[in-house]
Length: 253
Image (cartoon, rainbow, N blue to C red; front, side):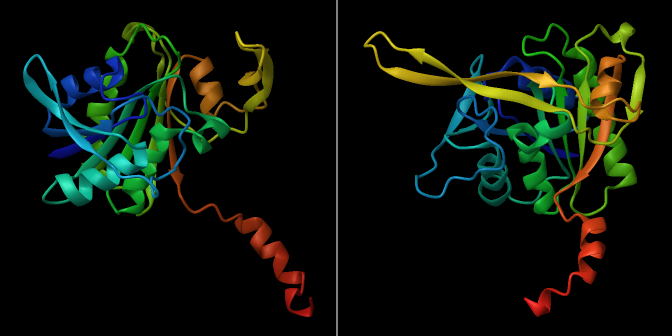
């Protein structure tokens, strides 16, 4: 099994190192990840600046390839330029902080997996529900198990698995829940501050607004101590609204 690994926390992050360590037990791993942190980069790609790729070494051994671009750039670069053939699977992570509910729109971690899905490569994104995680072990093991399962069972074209794991010791994880994407979102704002030169600037901040209550939603599963697995697709069409709008007689406009 050939696995392409990326993330949005950067090639030097602890999460990607823990993930690679575990995945090497089940297959050949190729890392193509951002040279620096690209959190909340979403699905942006680089068009106006050149991309540079540098080999990244850990303890004098080649760990992977660092790209001065976004997570989506890394997947394109990895599949089109670095690998000779498509990988069997793309895994993005392990991310610091959950990527659940509305957050998947902003997430560079999820976008790396989504770019792979667009390129017809099965993929999954995996995150731990803490910005300063203490426990990566279960998330890494789960990623490896899901990798084998996805290659066996297959995913629908364009679908990826978005996985979120509570930051708990393995023995305290209650299980794995198949979930739907929640609707909880960040209630954020720009805090005004003043720099040492007396010039105003703004820093994005806020807090999570929990709008979900159903047990089958990703954020609720995580809160209840379960690892959530959510199949998501890049088709954003609202099919219910599409059917409703058939009666709008748009041709009369």
